[in-house]
Image 1: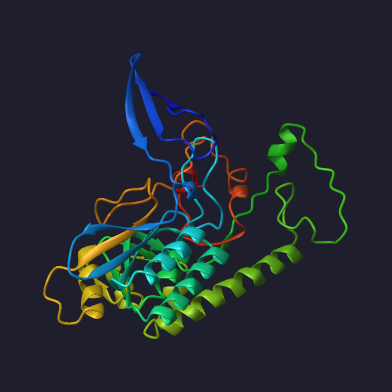
Image 2: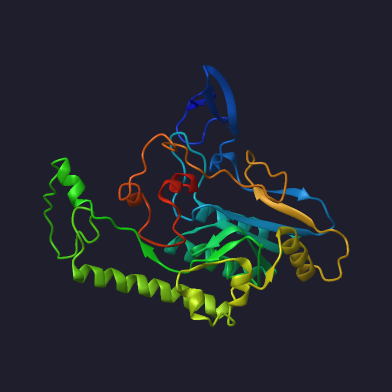
Length: 344
């Protein structure tokens, strides 16, 4: 039986990601072996700086968006990461200050996230394009659904892989009624409130019809905002099934006007190079933007943004873990126990 334990090998010890390195070890048959040596990622490592991962005469910048999109810092005891919304803005600023960049590839591998967070990032991307006039090609990797696709739709061209899962354009609010479970442990809520809807969405009781209607109207409004802005950028996306929350393969998304091409990351880089540097025959250079302690050695390099506390050690209970999520989400909802691996 393989047991897992976690240890910091750094002096001095510090909560969050401010130690020198995080080492995850496993114990197998009494023997200890190192499984993961992950450099911490935090703003204390300094500003993001360009890291050339593919030399060439002209630069294409890869702007990576990975994991759950939440406007919250992914830090804490035994965790690594930072606020993806803030990091996205910082990378945009760094790219706009780099005169060698001629085009941008927005590399997206995310199930989506908070509606407000995704809207903020999309609007940041639009302002970046207006300010720099750089062409932006979105490349959808394994998963680009919900708010992640909404973000990608702000690009000039969207490329999906042959095995990409995309779509999932909808809005969901995760609520659970735990009244019966609480009663088994003799936990009886005694709320004192002023205002009929002050405790709307509480897990201590079922929703009333008036509460359901109120929350449904909010979800419908957010969904309309997302679909309206996607259609402005994707006028060919007229099929109603493209916006009812279902997911698609890359080719299915292309048939519905959500995607322009089915290719891969190298194809996206080549297209961005052609848009930014017409007539360039040489292989384009590629640059990414990283903290000083977050190296990038290939175009697939991903910043660790995964809190490790509790992962695989504590039960993931519906309602309790979901309460840590933001309210309205635009996301292809992953299996419950995957949330800790997605960054929350």
